[in-house]
Image 1 (spheres, one colour):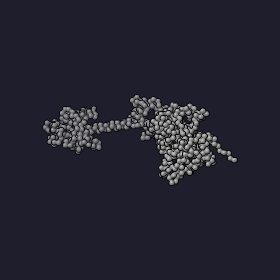
Image 2 (cartoon, rainbow, N blue to C red):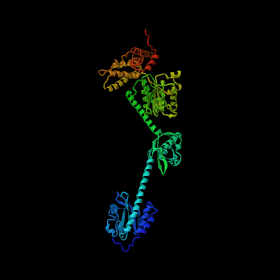
Image 3 (cartoon, rainbow, N blue to C red):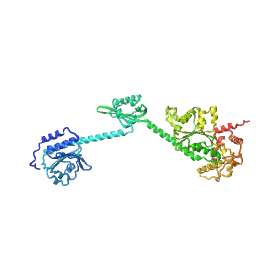
Image 4 (tube, one colour):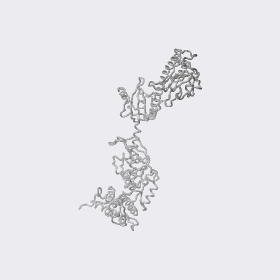
Length: 638
């Protein structure tokens, strides 16, 4: 293409000097602005622009556009149908010396700008990827000038390098921001320390765990947040890291560290330590995780597991015993007492012989109370060895005594917000009675091996078949504890005083037991009469056991009492159904006679298999107590 007559020869040196002087001190966006302005001036064109290529949209966005002595802002356009399409698509220089609009009629911007000529070159990355392009535009012909093309390509390379630098810088900033967000969003405390163990940075989790402000902590020694021993430990470990190879300068701190919050409270923390260098300066990254949160979570899981087991026992007990059953006057009084006391938080002392249903009544009180949605925790004071009962009540710390391999919650902690039922309270050792009194009065205790006082909100129900008042007078039971427990005494009548309830209870037990065995059972009038003529020293529990044996041995759908109740003889139970009411002396004689028969049948063996207690359906300790009260002694051998 011939040079236009009006076009003066290009002074290459002057052009290069103009562009170099105009861009030498600039970087980034100012560099691109200086480049296109000085490029247009040096090449004598009325427009020049540098762009960034968006491959997904196939468009170019101007980083700087100088046109007719001013700036074109926010210029972005599709390359389709433009002279730039070949520059970007074919990665080559494109020079249109004249008649630009005629050659590219689909480019909507050329005609309004009065464009006549164009020259553009691609901006390429080191791998050949097109980053954008650099171009000049003029409203007069632009004859082919090798020196002009060379200048355009020289500064295209310079623009390409600057664009690569900006992209690398942007990528670096993005990665740094991403890393900062990663560190700041971490749940563990992350602290950066310099070679003097002064804080250079910490994440929000560290601020929370240590209870401090990062802005006020940075530049200060981290020793404030470690115990003296842990600070010495950390210093020693840093020395060990310095001696390691560069790629192995990290470690898990064995045993963790004892950290301190800004308020001085200490807490155990798992910890890791690593080292890195920047600008020949050493830095250390310390990551802390409070062990307390994990321990609390583990303890909560253990507590929930134990509570679940108690609830399973409750469900099983409810299935076994059902609701309180009875229409006799003594039983109506018990039900009325339960209704009165249930909605209060009063301590209840359940009194009565073994087998009268004290645990069932305790469950009924809890179920009718405002604490029904919390657990009912049961403790049999007579079944726990004296050496373990304090731990059972109040829990213990790890290592509190031989065998305490882990921390354990006590029954009072498990009952917090609910109810605790202390059965056989009369068997509680004297040394523990004073601690129980403190829980009742103050609602607090210390676990075994701990100096930390724990507060609880627990309603206490107790039961005994002993005469606690007499025990308090003779010194075997604390008098102050007795009066604290005796807020609402509730006496459960023995079954022999509930004559009209026997048939109803027997029918209920028989139906339940038969259903479990897949049978159908009928209780004849003869069976009812025999049940009524028995004194039931073991009370409701004995009746249930007898009925279960009778169902097991039943034939032809009839209850069989021959083996279940072979000793059922004598006069009727004191009730109007029997025709007359027996005196207390007559009842005592009847009970004595029945016990003697059982003892004789067992060879005067009180406990064990086929012992008198088993035959009577009684607790051996209860039988021994009744034998003493009734003055029953084994006859001397002749």
